[in-house]
Length: 136
Image: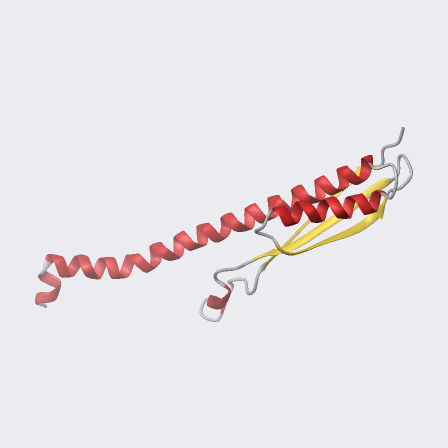
């Protein structure tokens, strides 16, 4: 019992209990920030690709895919980025719809066996953007 009466020993026990909790909270905050940043990057890539395709005078879908892929590669946090054309546009007034998907790493994927309810594997991100094909 002398161990618990010694002030330095008690501070060591308190630090040993609170430090892992503080580190987990910090990592969870960083992980959440990465997911939010990745979602914003995917949304921006979809919007940019659809906008560039909507102002293209020929092969709107080609421009949309190229620009969206360039935008998603520029945001290096998103892995396995993929671009899908849902509506190709082409004629003035028609819709050009694009979907961009990707993944963000999950730091807590291995803890799902210990703590049920935590997501396993990387976080899946998806965004869509629709623009009306312009023409002049």
